[in-house]
Image (cartoon, rainbow, N blue to C red; front, side):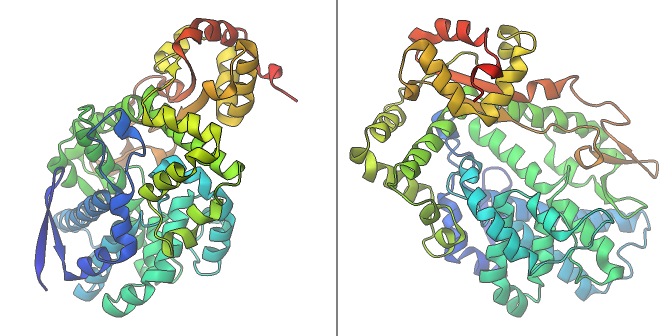
Length: 470
């Protein structure tokens, strides 16, 4: 089979083969070239124009490297974990992980996570569709429907698309079970897997979907590089060689990764706080969502025409279709015209605080809890209340909310490390975390024009949820 190389700014040379190309050359995978990985972050970081396409290639490359290193490291430790498998079985495992990594984001909405909320109406249909096709190995407290309902819509969309549009190729050309592949994307093991192979498939699921997965690994490296933020310093080669399997057949980092774990924890926190939660990134993301919501509310577009499985698979909707549709409707709505002018002419509202630390300094006591919850759950009501208090139009106020889940003591969100043959945890056992980071991972943002910031701050300092309750 012919080998090809793709030049990548993050991983340098990514090796692909003819089978990889068969998937990459499909229209649905090529669509990912036109899905911005960081939504509207390019307004703030001009270099952040990278797409889901190269991210998926990076995850595939990392996933394959990690699995090869896991097998090699296990053999060095003389573990029997892989030795009972034939070469054909190991090859099937490698292909299953490789194509799960390659296709894991095939179902992303336009502008990636920014527009994920518009998939919510479709989520029940996706859960119902997948529940009839997938069955997982379950813990005593789990059931398949609950697991599916807990997953983000884009993961469900990816799996649904794989089962409907890639099953024949995976089964006939690559001899890979698409149900196994989808289960790995969702961080689970398919019940179709023979009992003596389930631990192996669980390792594959952890490589793609866990606290130390290659999806996080790639986006931290890629987003850090493409934004120019230089916040996450990770020794990629050293970290890759640190992946191994514990004596309990779980994916862990070996002791050689200990020196990198603090960088991984701090780097991820830094990228979230200063890139993904940058006040201007949050604003432009929110502005786009408000424009799309207005188009839908005013009947100018139908949600299902742009944010549904049919929109992805039949219309191959991407970011440029969304922008085109906005431009088409600018003259049909004054509100759309005003919002789009703000977008096009870069006339952005100003934040009352620029980051979590400033928020906690400016807003004291229990009031901050009300602002956090209402910015998340009732932004429209909060905007209307502020507009009335400030005597300005509601469209001249923007309320938004930014949140991320830091590594924490929960086993699924901590980093497992094999030390002297025993699994320990970076945060739970070693305390390798920034104290009180969770306090700063949940931030409300309020934006107004610069002439009203002081007056707006006065209103916010006396705000409570009771003021907007029905």
